[in-house]
Length: 444
Image 1 (tube, helix red, strand yellow):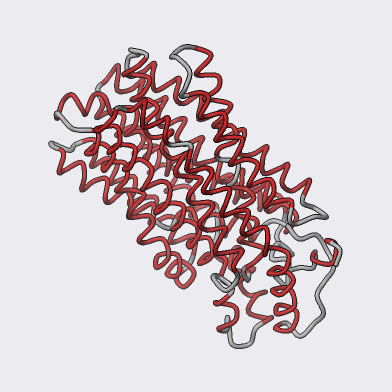
Image 2 (cartoon, one colour):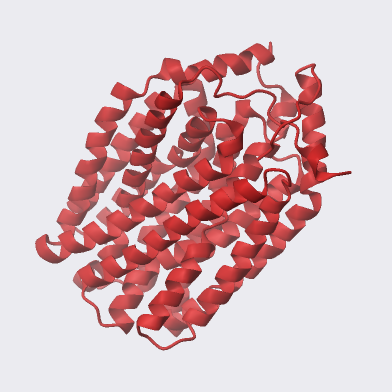
């Protein structure tokens, strides 16, 4: 069977119908802005690791927990909070989340000891738990299907841009005004955006897409629709592969400032700025990788999985080479090239999940992806690398780290073996559910 026969719409309807493109971009810009605030609050900690480590005499394992507790709470709470957001309103939920993580970040600024900081970081994680899944569901809903990988990768790049700003600005603020002002600056930025968001993004306009969905299902999402979140082998493999690959990217994001401080002898602000520039490279790479995914996968959906495998393996090779090199500018360049590709799986993974799950449960599907990304990657990675660093040193830990990309590539390869078959089966079920034939069109 030719690849073009698998390109029917797996989601039944185009949820962007009736939404002005200008308004869609406003929604994207504001949701993107809050995602930047989310990661500024999350990653500013990395810039001040050396200062907090010295002031409170902490181990790398304790520092890793301060970072990992946020991702851990995101992993635990993303699913239930995403379901609540679907029920009580996405705009209201996103606003409450932003206020909570901003106030919790302010709590980090006034923490008197490690225990206070750990509790404040716990609350940051609670506030940020469902933002990624609910935010991307809003963005995907207001744009056409054939932009999914590009928009998903661009939206996810907001996390990297936020990490860039959080680390760069946090490092500068910490160096000149003290580490507490680094947290305070991130908190103020988040509170300003949280105030603007509900004033410009209206629930009734976003909710119109849900009315379209309800029109296609008299009794709302049935068991078959909910089962699409985990029913196919390829979608489950996508969750796992994406999470394993973020083990690598998440570890570099968290520990690179400390690496530059210890092995390059850089001050807090200089280490943070260089780390932020490397993260900026990964953000650009994520967007370009997503655009390539949409372009090459337009008529061949399975190419998305092939590209995800390629991003894993090429990133693994480059980062392995980088951490085998002596310290210096050439090493930093190779690290930047490795990170350019290492997080490129965000776009293909998000598009694959969107293609294999029903529109009415996209928030829950993306929450499941977020759970895997955090448990297997963003939480587990920094914790494991912190433990290894205490035992064998951070440089040696970084040399072992890229091996996880090989495991991620293997899981994506398994997904590729079943992707076209699973997508065809889902298209058929979707057509039967909506009592209409599958529509021929691009499947991203």
